[in-house]
Length: 180
Image 1 (cartoon, rainbow, N blue to C red):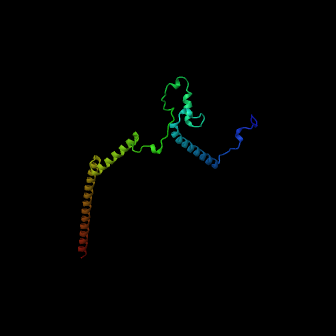
Image 2 (spheres, one colour):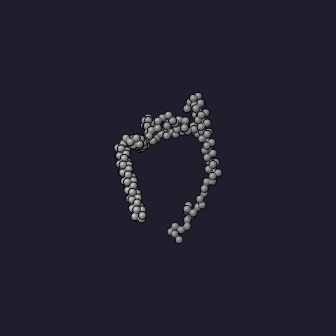
Image 3 (cartoon, rainbow, N blue to C red):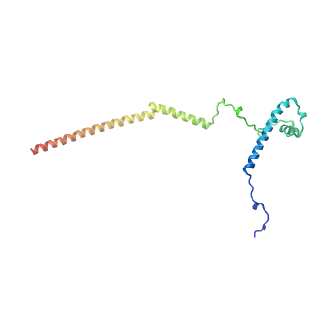
């Protein structure tokens, strides 16, 4: 038996899992709570103009009162000095309607270099097809040389063929004369 004996540790317990129905119920409750908060904020905006901050009841459950209380609770010099720490402020998410689509998209250095590389390649290919690049000129010269060589080879073959035919005709003529 192991040293500690058999104690009722946590490792032997059965695991419990949250059922999908419970998750759905929690999600619906969360959505409803958010919806109610938004309605309170909308209603609170109109009422906030008429009411002063002194008229608000403490512990009403609104987030604004919690923020104000935390500002009031600052002790000593901390309340006098305003700190601009970007990490301290909660970042607000932008809504889809707030995003400006008219702004030109800022490209990263790598993206700009990639686009420039593609444009340069396209320009080079256009000039190459037009025969204006050094490589294209060299290719055309090589092609002209190859064409000349092929023409000469074709002429040689033609002459050899004619010579063979003439020799064969002459050999037939000799054979026909010798038979007579």
